Image (tube, rainbow, N blue to C red; front, side):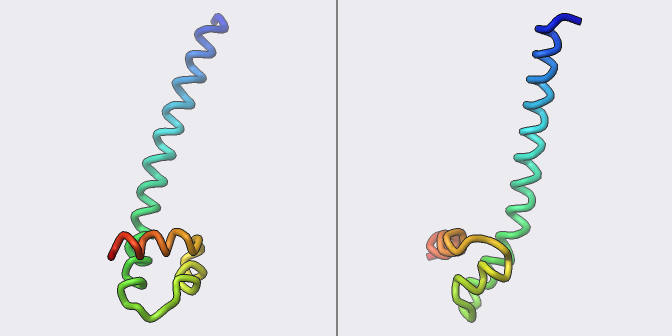
Amino acid sequence: MNNSSFDEGVEVGEARGVEKGRKQGLKEGFHLTVPIVKEILKGELYHEEIAERFYVSVQLVTKLSEELN
């Protein structure tokens, strides 16, 4: 095996790993976003409380809230 074949194999493997990671991240993000949006819509908690409950940043909760308005 020459170095270029090895390098090409590494690049292909990395690309597949990145794509798989993106898909998993999107899936997890969606599953997390729905309950956060439900909490925002209830209007019973401050953004800081929602962020703490779901282990996300206040900025994320605020951004989701702004997108709903």
